[in-house]
Image 1 (tube, one colour):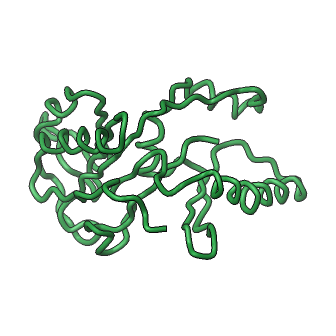
Image 2 (cartoon, one colour):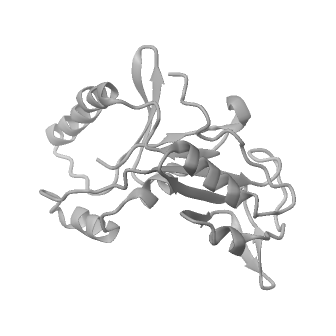
Length: 218
């Protein structure tokens, strides 16, 4: 098992507005506990693995389950055979083990005995989106301040909807950048992520200001 993460799907603060591909994430998930971990293993993962075995199916890769926590327990929204976005931008900066070795071990079917080590600190990821996303938006907006933001401690900048144009970086999609920061607490990680965001500017830049501010209701 890799680490958990909680996505923030709605476009606006306080979980308002339309659903998006994800406006930010926090890892580890702040709405996860040992009871839900046990429910996930017993009612979702084990039946899935038993079904694959019973039907003679072999799968080597990454299964990414998207879950919703309801009053009636966990519900599966989807299984992806890939990493999820933006959850991965919060999970992988916490990974202390060598990712390439894990991927090669998966391909070659020799994960027995392999341990995966994660940084105990919290990671918070905030998405910078084009104005209007997830609806109609404009592209080609010059992005400034990336170098200054990258110099801040424990900050990583992941490019999504960007491209080089005439020697500069400009927007080329709806979700433009993912800003991830690590911290000893959720508060420290949030503060670092938003400090980096204050260094970055492009016309129409939109982001949520409440990523990981409050635990999920469920």
